[in-house]
Length: 209
Image 1 (spheres, rainbow, N blue to C red):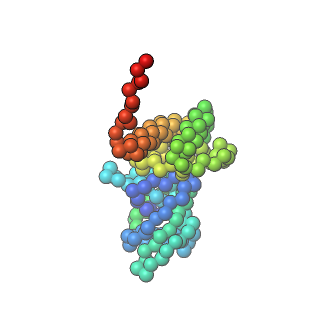
Image 2 (image 1 turned 120 degrees about the vertical axis):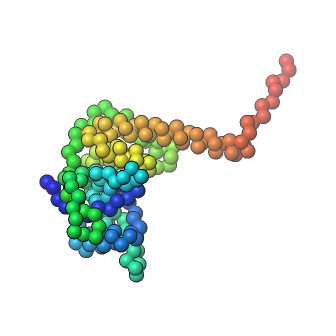
Image 3 (image 1 turned 90 degrees about the horizontal axis):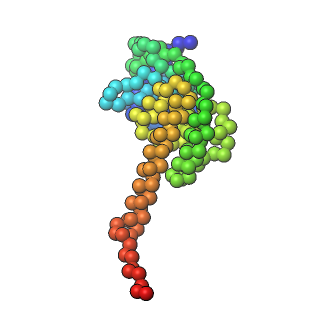
């Protein structure tokens, strides 16, 4: 079922169930967010970069207002709702609006679920991220649960969101987490070298027989 919604274009990606802090300072967004708070309705977060604004994004509801300033600026926390895709842009408001439709997913995870859960827990332990014991029992798709807990690069995170099967999303996340593990290992190697002033430890020659 299609509906009209206000658009908040952002250089970050919001996934379902994710909490995201926002500093609202542009006039159009101050009006959009204020109206959504007053009317208890969501707006749409769309990822925007040098390549333009994407057509698939996540609805967002304001769950907490942290600060309100005299000039209308706000610090708020929003929570990701559902994924929708833009059908057509509409006009008539100071901010961008669009008619959107919810996306349809294939939620069959297959064998990728166990593999993704295993590498996420390994990554979480290495990065110091909390990995809940009941993550594999969550009712929401595991891919979205992982995406709320790892700070993936926004463009790559958007690419994962645009995949319409849980199995495909999990395979993509497995690859991203594997790359993240490699990066963490390099950071650890650099840290250890820094502790030794970047020099290899001196090895004593073996004692003569």
